[in-house]
Image (cartoon, helix red, strand yellow):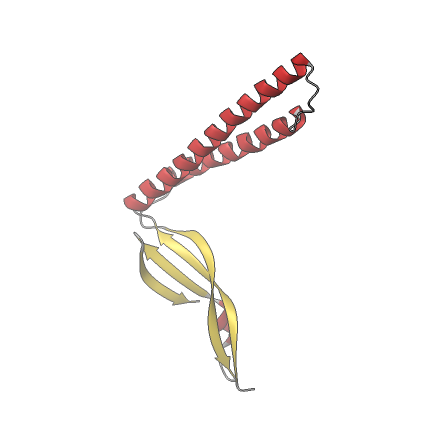
Length: 136
């Protein structure tokens, strides 16, 4: 076998600009809004559950108070993490590079290739445009 195609990891980075900061904060604020809506929904379910228990309904509640409390705790923790991320975005230095995500790409290798070329690839974006493709 002379050649082989592999799948390699690709690191995607973003150059921090004002536009990136605004977009990142807007995305995080949308996520915060969705969590707040979910917390309100849980509060409604909790009140309904308490009402059913108070009435001693013959129907067994589908969701227990413990499950609601666990879900609330998970949402509150996630909300706290998102608030921290909003603060971190505000502290990012313009022009710095931050990790945006990871992807994969195929690469063809053959005998005699430099193995380091296969492993390290980065794509750098600035305001949604690919500015650099680096082999580490």
